[in-house]
Length: 258
Length: 338
Image 1 (cartoon, chains in turn blue, purple):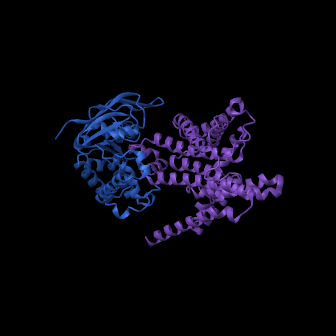
Image 2 (cartoon, chains in turn brown, orange):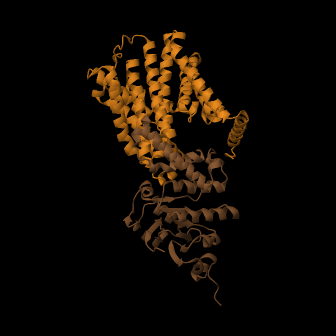
Image 3 (tube, one colour):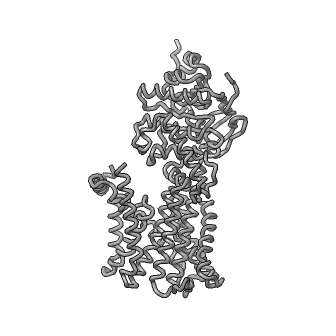
């Protein structure tokens, strides 16, 4: 097992007003692992995602991706570096079909310059054809082919989630951030989603999962980091986390003395 | 699938019929006042189209169409009257000048594409009309009169309305073709993504800001084209024409017709707004009131525009209308909206 960090979060802080959402956080994400990020509500999990993917400007600290400082880059520049994410609430192109959703996801794959696209030259058409094949392949792999002409808004919730992952995968990321991928799913769907996450990891993509369902996280992830009030309170294998006193305190509350 | 092909075929048929009618129109109707209304209808639909393109492609509301219309008109007029250029060179040059100014304005204002952008466009339209009025070099408040007609081309003299009609028809179709080609390309797909969910588009590596600026510049250049034509058609331009209220009127055309249908929506809306006030002239003073009431009715009962509402099934539409009536009665009786 490799132990090189693909993403390093160094002393990162983010305040909303006077409130610390993330406070002096250090975090390493290793190559080809599935890292679970858990914590009570308001622990700063989603804030951390928003910081890494470039939606919030950083107040202090650095983020280093593959030995390269990506602090302060725009969201689209960070996507170009190879970090993709999904959103908590299914954020899709709702009024577009499943196929179009994934097709747009392949935006970074175009090599022909944009002005040529206007004239629909043969090279552009060929390139589009190749990318359409790739879209079909990806849809097939994710089991969305039967739904490809449906509008995203008409999909059942579980499929919307999978489509979200599918769009993120279309960018060909090295690091994939999944924000609550299991919310609102029944046990069968959860099981399928976890299998899918494992499958994506096996392609060599590092995955970070933020999730409320602690049981599922224990099942899916090799390593877990627990956040509370924007600080890291525990880190380790699922077994270690389950017996960590601080974690139990954060979730259930302090045991009464005496 | 059969339904889809049928629908495509019937749409092509409709487009061909409409095209043939528009080409033959000045030969069927031989009244130069009517010709004038048709031409104004085309200018208005062209402007309306620029509004809906910015709305559909970039998700922004532009209330400064008048500014770019005015810049196009002034650039073309001054090139011809002061520079002595022929109209056929002044037309593309004025489009370019409009494009450059739109780029400069867009790069600054689209940093905040929401409400700040709307306000900035309104202010910009006012500033442009003030600049044209206050500075003598730009003709002052009197503007320019006796703007020359386009030079004869291929033996066609621009001394009746008919050649103007065909010229604006060609320019309109040119703009439609350009927009269609853009919309069918990768750029169009990105625009769709940006208007549907700018946040998600960003995480896919799309530079949302750049594509918004692009949509704004292309649409505004089309407004400049309309302005250049307008100046040489009416042969007079004045700063007041392009002031605040003009841009407000422009956004009504696509909203009336249907904001999602960026070719037929503005055409229908502009046709309604060009012809109905003319018919209502007999009612004299209360004409604006009737027009206003008509607008209110349409906006309340057909929120997706006329085409948008008609393309829904009738029962859906009726349900929407009864919903809307309930909402309004609730509101009127002081209970607030649902």
